[in-house]
Image (cartoon, rainbow, N blue to C red; front, top):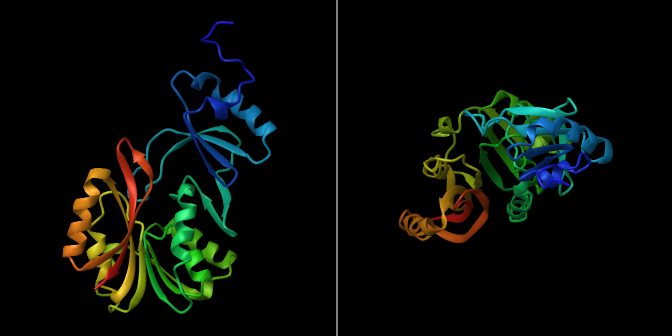
Length: 261
């Protein structure tokens, strides 16, 4: 057989350069040259694998304030799904909102640090993957999200997971929070998008002295030591620094668990 010919029954998942599963939707990164046969193989994949209903491939990278990519549908038709992790469920439409399933363990790591009765602020709340488990621990959460679509899914997911009475949703730009609340929050989770490190100082103004901040940023490894020194000089105690996966060559997502002085 010609080495350049791919058998028709070859699994598309094995041919892809990467796969992201969100609920029952498989999002594939396809190598060049596979597009012509992708739809046929995607249909066969859906027929064989009961956990996959729709197969997509990205047409663009994340775009705009909503951080949403555009997709080509290879099989199936519905881009609405329910993603489940650690006993919680998140309904969403991948065409409308950003969702990263690879942060599931990190979200639970943060939630397990939360005590009942805490007041927690979550900007960039999305459809609620940080909000819901924190509220389920008994915290009262203020969730801020500028995307109307994400806010709709967030409210639905709070109801579906039984935490709606402990979550207040603000449809607003996180930058507009300044001055809205006094420094009274016990904790904040800041899953800031790329290039928005300045939100740390803004959000920290609303966290009480001694409160905790979980700050997410995108950095190269060699930048972490300098950033740690800067945060220390600004009055934060750096309790933990962890890498949460690569996002680009040499660039990773990092989380800093900070205690405010």
